[in-house]
Image (cartoon, rainbow over all chains, first blue to last red; front, top):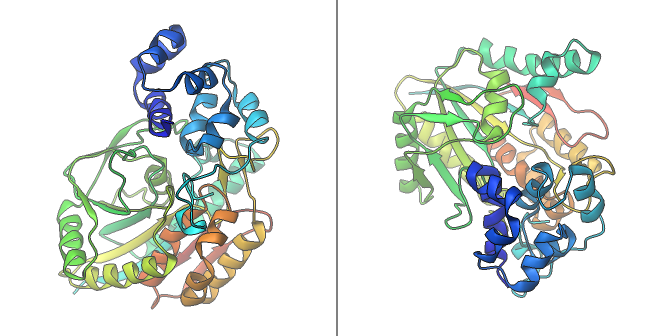
Amino acid sequence: MSVYEINHICYLASHDREFCRELRTDPVGLLARSRLTPEERAQMLAGDVRALYERGAHPVLLVRLGTHRLFGLTPELYGERIRLATRPIDECDDGPESAGPGAG
Amino acid sequence: MAHIVAAAGVPHTPVFPSLARQDTAAGQDIAARYEAVRRVVAGADPDVVVVLSCDHINTFFLDAWPTFAIVAADVVNGPNDEVPGVATAELPVDARVGRHLHRQLVRQEFDPVLSQGCTVDHSVVVPLHFVNQERVPVVPVYINGMVGPLPTAQRCRRLGVAIRRALEGLPARRVAVVASGSFSLEVGGPRMDPGRLYGVPDPDWAARAAAHLRAGRVERLASEAGPERIAHAGTVAGEILPWITMAEICRELSCAVMDHRAGEGHAFAAWS
């Protein structure tokens, strides 16, 4: 999986206006050029933030998809979906010391 | 020798600057809470303000994520993210103090990243918007409270000792230290409140942290602020780490303001 790429897309959505514009106008084309796996790409295009969070995407980055209203999300819809999520599983997790993104 | 003349801790909620300008009960309330802190800081007449904060993955990204970082740029602009009603502007930075702090921390076996060119986000801009209206030159210091593994609270306390020693080595300065952030706060995660983009998962911990800070129990606060506690308190509850560092730096000062309300995840506090 490419959690780093998910996080990077969320970061660029909030820091690169041209990137954000293209995410709005041609999300399929832009994500096709990314290093996301087909499954991750489908989840992002569907605004499935629960699945992306459970993969390990950082919530402080992921929430920007909602605040920037990307992939059909609104802040309200983001909240509804993320509240159904469970803590991401980290393969290297040996307890709270190594808690993943957000330490939460 | 420099003197640490004041310290403070405040939340950095991005909507607070615009809320504080509203002629509403909520606006007047938030403005008054920040103003009580500002009065203490301004009354101490500092000539440099060290801001301890957690970058929200805006200044730095995960390609090279620092545990500790010090900004010693000649020019710093912020906010680099959304703070309604606050335009991006140049912040006055004391790069000489930043470089001194970096050098002295390395000599004390801390190894922070040195940034000589960056922008800063709401976690730096919002506190300064309220408590540094005199635009005293600042030195931003970042502590990782966002991306696990976080530095331990005990290490942050030791960082406070090292920063205090470094600051005291400065010639004839009046230093204020401002910590930025909350004790319990969920942003972007599953424990946000319905209808909101935040939540306070552990208000009891926030109240306990505020009580420890008010009483000067820094060691006890650090011993209780373990990784499990922080993880339970929210996705950005690592923001307590700058508070612990600040409390260690200013341990000789007296608490002048500690404004925490039941149910809230943060506090407005000042020491002089």
